[in-house]
Length: 121
Picture (cartoon, helix red, strand yellow):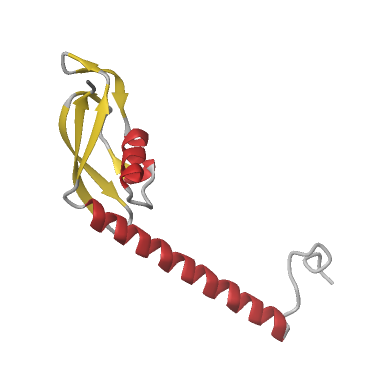
């Protein structure tokens, strides 16, 4: 016998094994479909939205900067699920107050929205 069976890297093609493999494949397909549905729902909710973020600033300059992680956290706080920092396309960090167009890319769907940075107080 070769080394695959003794090392547990392969198993005989029995009816039970084939059924388990088919079941695992169906679970993967269902998980992928759920992921696509979540991405589509997030893109639909974000399309045309205006995300307002209040930060410390002086004379339009921020104390720090706003990056994709901060924007994703603000989106989740707004109640839109399924958005992580890798979905946010931000050419450079935002360092001043104002409104900035941002795009979210979910692979299967894209959404353009505005991020409004306002000074606290």
